[in-house]
Length: 550
Image (cartoon, rainbow, N blue to C red; front, side):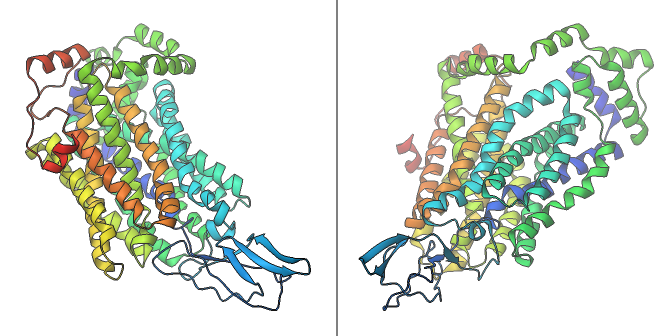
C-alpha cells in the first residue's frame, strides 16, 4: 500500500496544493522559533548590584556592585549608607546593638541593553538566579514531555487536528503569557508552550512529509528548516528595536495570527487516513489535490483499490493504541534498543550524539551576551549561519559519507569551542567569527545525525530509536542554559570548555558507528547483527585526538 500511494502522489505531482501545505507548515517556525529562543532577550543574564534599603543608614557610605558577566561590569550609582558588603549577596549595617549582616533582597540591574526583562522584573539574582535560567529550561522540559504524547495523539487523532489545535493554543498562550503578573505562572506557561511546540512543529513536519511528492521529500525536509533560520534573523532585528520583554514576546507572536485563516485550507494526510481505514476521506483529499494540480487520477475502481488498505487491521490497531498501552509499550520495549551488541553500540552512540548536539546548539545560540557586545547582531548572525548548514548538508553527506562528515563536524565544533576561552575579550570580532563557525558546524551535526540515524536503525525499531534520541537532545537543551548562566557566572570560560569536550566525545563516539552510504536499509535487528558478523566495520582513518578518545 505504501508504494502504491507513493506512486499516486507521484502522479499528482507538485502544484498549488502541495506548495500551500509546504508554505503554511513552514510558516509555523516564524513564531515558534523566537519563543523557543526567548531566553536570549526575554530572560538574559544581567549585571546587577545590591540595592540597600534607605532605612539602613550609618555614618559610613560605601557602594558595591556585583556582576554576573566578565564582558562589561555594571557600575551602580545607588547611594547607600552601609558599612561594607560581606559578600555579593549580603551587606553589613551598623546598629545600636552592633554590626548586623543582612541579605540583599532588592537589586539594581544593568538596563543599558534591555529596558525591562523577566530577570530584572522578578529580581532574579543571587539565590533566585536559577529561576532566570529556568525560563529557558522549562520550555525544553515541555518539549521533552510533549514529544512522546504528541506522537501518540497524532497517530490516534490525525495530523491536521493536532496542527490546527496546537497552533491556535500556542498563539493564544504565547500572547497571554506575555502579560502574566506572577513568576510561577510565567514559568508554567513556558512549560505548556514547550509541550505545544512539539505539537506544532513535529506534527506539521510529519504532515508536510506525507503530502509531498516522494522525489521532493528529502529536499523539502531540509529546506523547510530555513524558516527556522529566518525566524532567528527576524528575532534579532525585533529584539534590537523592542527592549521591553513583554512587548517583544507579544510582537514576535503576532505573525501567528496571520496563519490562523490559512489553517482552514489544510487537508489531513491521505496516508494516515488510509492506514486508519478512512478510505472515503482519503479519496476526497486526493481528488481535491488533483483539482488543484490539474492532474488526472486513475479510474474510480482502481483509485478505491489503492486506498482501501486493511480497515479491520487498522481498526484493531486503533483499539489497542490507548495511552496506557503506549506507556507500557515504551517501558517494555525501551530495552529492545540495548538488546544486541551492534544495536546497543548504535543506540548509545546516537544518544551521545543527540545529547551533545542539543546541548552545544542551544548553548551557542543563547550565548550572545557572553560572546558579543551586541546580542541582537549575534542572534541575526546565528540565524544566517544556519542557512548553509541546512542547504549544504545533503550534497556533502552524499559525497563524503555520513560517518566521516559527522565526525569532522563535531571535531570542528570542538576545536572552535575549546579555542574560544583562549582569545582575549578585546578581540571581539574574532570571538564572534569563531562562534559562528562553531554554530555552522553544530547545526550541520544536528541535521546529519538525524539523517544518519534513520539509516543506522533497522525498520523494526527505527521510530522508537529516533524518538528516544530526540528526547536525549532535549535533555541537552534543558542543561545548556544552566551551564551558560550558572557555571558561566563564576568561570566565564567554563561553558565553552564543557561544550567543547562534549562535542569531542560525540565525535569520538561517531567512530564506533558503521558507514551507511550506498547500503540498503536494514529491516530487522537480526539483519543488522548478521551484517556485523559477515562484514566487520572498516576503521576510518581519523585524527589522533579522536582515536585516543575512541
